Image (cartoon, rainbow, N blue to C red; front, side, top):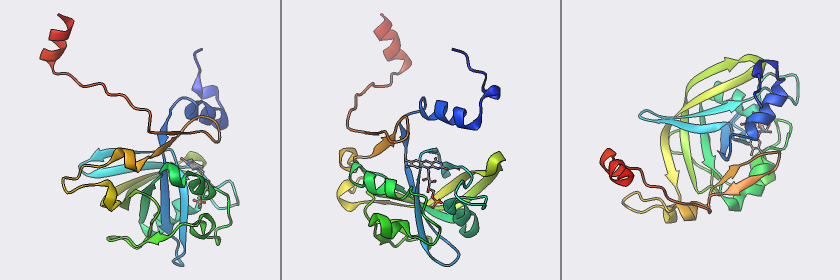
Length: 211
Ligand SMILES: Cc1cc2nc3c(=O)[nH]c(=O)nc-3n(C[C@H](O)[C@H](O)[C@H](O)COP(=O)(O)O)c2cc1C
């Protein structure tokens, strides 16, 4: 089927995107509001885009909860210019979903989900102690899109990996991270346990293989 996206409603486009682009990594983003209250929410319109400078991007839609244009996360990032991306392991997946409940802004997702703030090194916003790895970010760029959407680019200024998951040579224990990705529909996730390896080839190796 060919699909003319110009004729699709935003909701239909959303469904097609999230049911085709998967798995998507999940950024559990922690921020501080103007009164210093910690906020946490998951975002799967997320990925890394550059290692030098180290940049990651998050797409945040408008606030459907009340008349305000931005979700708490987008507002806090724009106000404070900083945020932490906490990666999501299988162990904390259910608690990550609690952070997506549409709580009023005065409710702390940290408390509701039972997460412990982990002090950051370079920014004021705390990370999440139960997350196996995280990135402290400063706002690099924000693009305001139609429908109150925001395309947030963050520059990673500090990185955290739990001590037992990385060695002195900076080899990360990916099995130990046990990260999850978001799949199709509303509540489907996948682990990163089912893996296979396909080595890249030099031109010479490719020619030798073709014979
Ligand atoms: C796994 C997962 C991924 C999500 N990804 C996004 C996303 O990419 N963009 C978005 O705007 N909302 C996304 N949401 C919904 C937000 O997490 C939700 O609206 C949350 O309440 C926002 O909280 P805040 O107002 O504290 O920022 C996602 C929810 C879940 C459970």
